[in-house]
Image 1 (cartoon, rainbow, N blue to C red):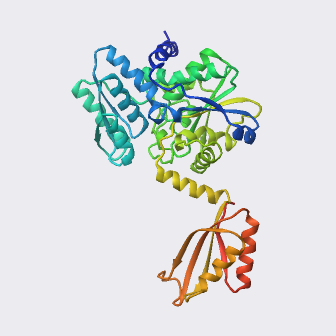
Image 2: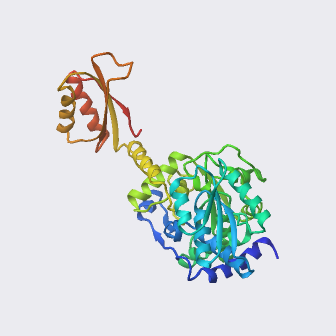
Image 3: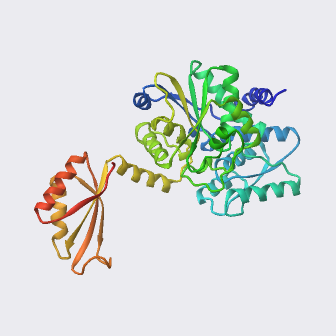
Length: 408
């Protein structure tokens, strides 16, 4: 039996195992993204899955298989969603999970994993170091190690998403999937290609961590030693051996998007669709909004793979996006450091009905002349033309302010 056929059989078993354990997440049509792209866009909402991401599917199925074999404990390494998926699954199955996480894993991720009853060990500076230690300990203790993506059971569990997509939208043309190590897209591709061979399965990776994308186009596994992206849920240095074989055989295309495109996707999902997605979960939306994947006049499903976003990062994405979208601007100028000068500026802004969101009043900068103050104001604006009128009015009053940040 081939690798693909073996996993296909496991997907059918995983569907039964997971049926009463996880959420069957909704597939919802997005009027906003359909209008923007000229296609018929549906979102598969794995951000609404238990633990906030798709990872629980593969983790639960893998752990269930281990319990059938008599194991009651496991070890894994993760800096995010896989950790929570394993921890939750272990708690549901009465098993013990030990999870190695890098020392600098965000506090909220560590606490979320602990909340499911797992033992968390912080080790190493990066994921690879935590992974190596976890694998070493699993061999020493004789405890099964659960790989986050390069495992046929994990792939099969994730593949149940493909079956759900087909059952809810049989005439789907394109399915777009976020890609890290490749477990998710491998499972989905196997399920969909068995059910509808004509469907196109396309993967998306961030430009800052493109190992699977590079491997796909070079025809061999490529390792990228230096990786950085806001989409931390898909940061891997190289794809898996198993996943790469499946991707080469079944995936129709791979594209990359940059962090600015990812941030815009997170922002628009939140503002227009009222969906909270982590950056990794928004890769597919970034791909269609940037034009990297043409879905015009086609029925497409975009997988929103997770919603576990760091709120401080989300706030920065929102703030940055408001400037990039031209909804907020900053103006800067020099004022005499005396009472009443700032009021003149504020009065003009009030006259045009603009809202001030921030004021930075700098006297201590050694580059600012004594007796002067540098003032920077963040403003909400309805359009670019109105800020031009504000700057002209300020200049007429002898106040020279410049626009320093726009959405252009």
